Amino acid sequence: MNRARPSAVALSAAIAGLALVAACGTNPYATSGAVQQVSLGAQQQLSASTVQAAPGAGQAQLVTSTVEGLGAVLADAEGHTLYRYAKDTAKPPKVACVDGCAEMWPPLLSDSPALAAGVDARLVSLVTRPDGRKQVTVGGWPVYRYAKDTGSGIALGQNVSADWAAITPAGEKAAAAAGAPAAKTSIGTADIGGLGPVLTDPAGRTLYLFTQDGRGSGTSTCDGACARTWPPLLVDGRITVAEDIDTGLVGQITRADGSKQVTVGGWPVYTYAKDGAPGEANGHGAGNTWYAMEPNGCKVDPSRRPDNSIATASSSGY
Image (cartoon, rainbow, N blue to C red; front, side):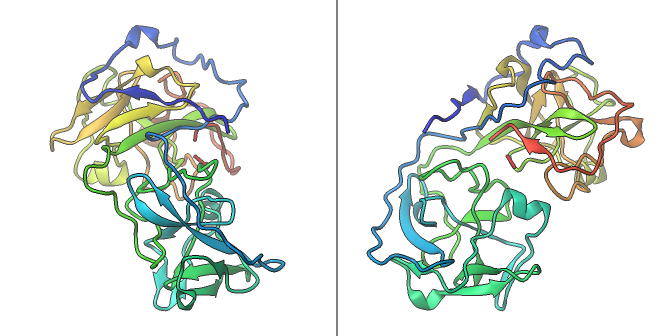
């Protein structure tokens, strides 16, 4: 399978290559419809258990696999890594990931309890989703795929946020093994109706700039209550970007609390707490100081307004 090659930005990189920034208001990717993907690390190897029995019609299948850096995790019949969501509950099983969330994190559906290999059958069951469909549970936890995992042995969804983790055959959260490579932060793009292509974080959420920061200032003026509404995109490892983003635009700054924040085109970048799902850009134009960002590191035209359509991802997310 062909996969997009990641472009890494070393931790020591500051704001680099700003001369490469296209004129603001000119989006070189406006006509690009190709779907790209972001790789968040070294190749991950899958070793799926062999299943002797074939599942019945409408019956999902679980296998165990080993993903480098995570150890044993669960996967579906095609080898796609499965995940659990912290906002769901296991006792009793209850689903919280619906609508836009379920587009990025498709539930593993089944008409009957999943056929499992290498998994204690007593841990496997079903929960009824709000729309009436049946979703597989393991240890009580509803399980999901991640839309950006494009093949077997890939676990890009691991810790995309604190709420998501690959699930083990025992229903527990998979944890990175000691000595595993440092976490990585990915930046992608998505096409939002009314705005056009914008930058997105690893979970597919729209990224914004704050004009009061000042381009190239090297500092963020949004902290405290501001940072709770506009969470900065932090990095604790390498930064990878989709192929349609110039790596020369990407850098980082040190915030007042010592954390590292990603910059694009010289602007510190943020998400918006009131964006409930990928494809939303409710923060664009807020206070006449917050704007969604084009892939060239500039703000989206302030006169534009997003419509209600869900974004079509061209990154690795949604």
